[in-house]
Length: 246
Ligand SMILES: [Zn+2]
Picture 1: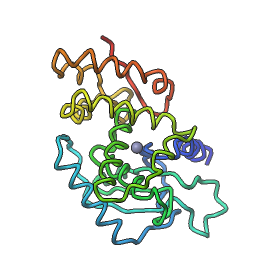
Picture 2: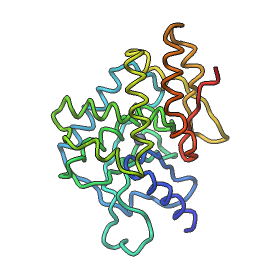
Picture 3: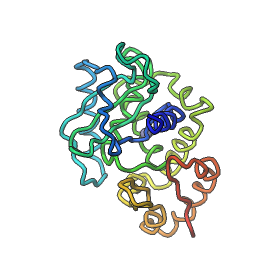
């Protein structure tokens, strides 16, 4: 139980988009059992279309999701007494069946930022094992642009990123937005350059390898942008972030 609380505490800190992809970590708990399933055809259509859109872009992934279950991260009434956290948004990979994914959303379906949070989580399906601030920035940028194209972006969406606890999300979003302005095609390929940092399944972005793939005259511009944001992003240990070593 202690471990569960730690896990959820971490998730709680990163409330906005979760994006801590969490796994069952060998624990027998079936997390989704505790939370309320979202039955909402419009959400399923939104997820399917957004996922297709991501897959049609320049992302490479060995990861293919077949089944997506959607949950509101609110405890069922019979579990209200549990100390498990609520109102987080994240993607859960089921180790025993990686083709089946659970998405948890931290707000109700009619909340003005529901689709923004949902689109962010759907982006993670391209590779749910990447837990890295470059990935978070990519997911937020995708969510913003995709919701805008569907007329589902609330005019106050940026407020959620401006909350104190989300300042790293705002930084990662601005970082990727600036990188995109320099390398409008190559920025997407960043997530194809991954590395394993520890002896587990999580992946980090190998930023040096990605920078090596860029045109010479763009490299220094990209590095300078990353340097602007690294102080904000590097000291969060729950999600990896590597600065260029050049
Ligand atoms: Zn995320």
